[in-house]
Amino acid sequence: MSSPMEVTLQDANETGTCKSDVVSESVTSSLLVDDKVLVSVEVCLKPSSTARIEDVQAAVERMLEKRSLSYTDGPVPVPDGDPFIQENVQRICICDTDESVQNHGILLFWQVKPVVHVFQLSEEGPGEEISGDGQLSSFNEWILPAKEFDGMWESLIYEAGLKQRLLRYAASALLFTEKGVDPFLVSWNRIILLHGPPGTGKTSLCKALAQKLSICFSSRYPQCQLVEVNAHSLFSKWFSESGKLVAKLFQKIQEMVEEENNLVFVLIDEVESLAAARKAALSGSEPSDSIRVVNALLTQMDKLKSSPNVIILTTSNITAAIDIAFVDRADIKAYVGPPTLQARYEILRSCLQELMRTGILSCSKEHLILPNYVSLRDKLNMPEQLEPLVPLDLAKQLLAVAELCEGLSGRALRKLPFLAHAALANPYHCDPSKYLCTLTETAKRELSEI
Ligand code: ADP
Image 1 (cartoon, rainbow, N blue to C red):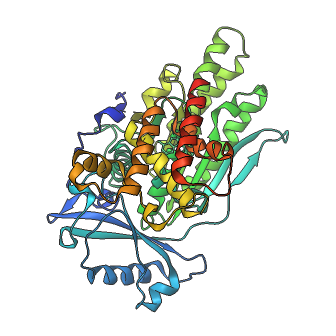
Image 2 (image 1 turned 120 degrees about the horizontal axis):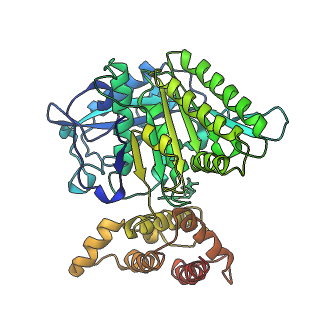
Image 3 (image 1 turned 45 degrees about the horizontal axis):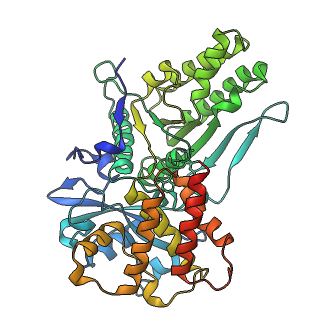
């Protein structure tokens, strides 16, 4: 069996650009075709729209042909002069050009070949499956792309490269199966394992990845589902139920997979509990039922391997304790670590921007855009260009907080701005600079408690 590919945040610089094939082309922005960079353009339809996807796609492609602006990540204004697009489109967004492109993510229009993905968010919410005794929730199920996961991909901040590489690995795996590559000659599974400390965004990244792929592959797979299983819940005290739960769960997944236009993601959280259950059974402290459950789960996963339209996403908080049989099955084993200084700054910056946008922090217009980490570094290295001063002072203050927060998880960082607000003497009229002082104090308190 081939060993899993280890991806870490540290090896972010080697990018391994591939110039070839159809499906992967439409997934990431960094591939070159006819010397042009393929850029993914996502078009979200209004919930009320009943327009045909192909019509909207053609209309947006025509609109982009006329465009003579540079391409950077972020929203593209919906054009005023096009009533069809106006009526049907909620937003248009250029995605993730910056991870692979030099020059701070700016591409000139003639360097770009836009690849348009049109989608409508499902508002159905999760379907939850409760086991026979009415107490144990064994899995949740979503239709993708789902409203709940909208914006999640963008909100997760890692060192450059990780998100794009996960996207490319998944795209290659789907492509290999789609093209019928012989698994005896080239071996690959469609299993991804994200491991690392708790709160580093692994579960969210799996969900966001599934959402992103459902959008990128919507022309091949018009229907897409995510099934979320908490491995821990399979190994609760109801061991006699566990076997039945696994069987029921995989029967359901098998039914979904039989529909060849369905792309199915299975998210298994906390897979370390598989190893724990097996170990406990061997030492005699748990019923040997648990071994049968782990084995049943692994066998079912192997069965799914023959289906081209399934991707299994797994997470674990404890690297050492992951079942070795399980690690062997994963193609991609990615370590997701605590946020770096740049990621901490960007996470806190996005929080601060949101508090300014919603008016929780009072600010004049000039405060509104804080420089990102890269341009802040550039500005600090060229002091003669230090203007305008006010956002820069705030950004420097924010950078100091980000430096202080070393050791806090992404989850803790996203909570920090709320805790700081709750600690303010006057929460209704809050100046950003004073708020950042409180944020510093709050960070110190949180750090002293870990
Ligand atoms: P894990 O599965 O690793 O325990 P979660 O996916 O439950 O982590 O993360 C919880 C929340 O923490 C996320 O929804 C997100 O808001 C925040 N978070 C964690 N890591 C990051 C990150 N690198 N960038 C932005 N937000 C993060």
